[in-house]
Amino acid sequence: MHTVVVGTTGVTAADVLAVARGGARVELSEDAVAALAAAREIVDALAAKPEPVYGVSTGFGALATRHISQELRTQLQRNIVRSHAAGMGPRVEREVVRALMFLRLKTLCSGRTGVRPAVAQTMADILNAGITPVVHEYGSLGCSGDLAPLSHCALTLMGEGDAEGPDGVVRPAGALLAEHGIEPVELREKEGLALLNGTDGMLGMLIMALADLDTLYKSADITAALSLEALLGTDKVLAPELHDIRPHPGQGASAANMLAVLKGSGLTGHHQGDAPRVQDAYSVRCAPQVAGAGRDTMAHARLVADRELASAVDNPVVLPDGRVESNGNFHGAPVAYVLDFLAIAAADLGSIAERRTDRLLDKNRSHGLPPFLADDAGVDSGLMIAQYTQAALVGEMKRLAVPASADSIPSSAMQEDHVSMGWSAARKLRTAVDSLARIVAIELYAATRAIELREGLTPAPASRAVIDAVRAAGVQGPGPDRFLAPDLEAADAFVRGGRLVAAVEPVTGPLA
Image (cartoon, rainbow, N blue to C red):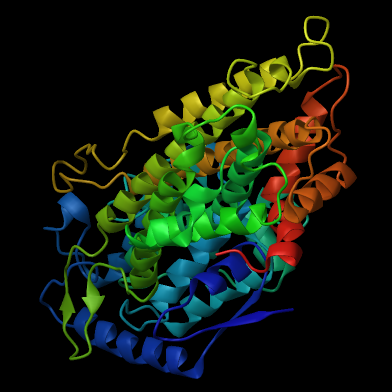
């Protein structure tokens, strides 16, 4: 099994995906263990002094003015975890919780939080045992970090609350730890707070969304090319010299992808000889501009994610010179903004894909295709309602594109009077990504059927490869009306699993 070693300098997005989705094992590096021990010595020294230090010998948030005596500090750390584990609603996905825990472990290993090495090792042991704390949908305002979700994870370290075992069964966390020989942690000064103060949930969901969107943007370039081909459109607008004079990198990449898919097509531009069209509609002609802008948005989001992956997010933090200082680095604004930005771009990509699908189904705009791509229009309805489903998904994506980060709900008796809502931005982006996959799948379903209905014209080799692969995957081609939902689900699985991209690249070479 793949192993990810966590050191003091952060981790990569690939590391997060390996642990969250691939079940990779986690190990602490020697330098991480040494940094943990060194920082703990500083915290222990401060804890022994009579002067109050936030997070070490005081209360938290609006209660930070109270100095906590030595005999109550273990209870203080235990209580913050218990009280903050106040989430409600459905459980969040296993991969999200694993990403959340792994990213908190990443910050612990930076040596900036002051926890003991044993705390970090216990978190690694829980991940390696396949134990997943029960974390709920609601409870995070994205400041101070993802408090409630991280508290539910910390509760498991203490052997309390509920968790899911490797068998998928939810049971008391204490029993699961005992079965795997893991000793619960008794938290000491600073440690409860250090386990809760981070942007780890929203960052983990950002990284996974970027991975999914990378596949979906390539898939959308492919389906846009197939729709252009099915509509007998011109590929001249994809010429690199046209995109070089507006040098947005994403636009050029999308145009190049579409041009590669269409290479050798006998359908593109076919209309020029019998029914001249000066230019195609925006949804066809401007596909690279829209998808390209989304790609550039993703590039900015990756930059933010990479910076967060290299960060130590906690409050207070142990600095290299031995000072323990309060700060505001737990605020989720940088991550929240790009989560919302991605949802906006994804909604626009879904919207333009739906417009192409609608054009394929409209006999007045499809340049010779049968109404709704039906076998016997009137007797058969064809893909009429598939487009309804696609339109409903687009409508939902537009609602999800409303920024969560533009909102702020004061909390903690106005001590935390401006919050990021980054967790909410991440949750709605996950839904948006899920919907985008379905929208692209419906365009794929319509475009492949439309190409097959162009009898006597030869599609591009890449298009032929897509049609052969999608039919082999159980997605049926043209014919009389049938129960359509299974076909659409099969097309969705084909896109979501990366098989659309995999079908094309042996013909085109790697897509950008």
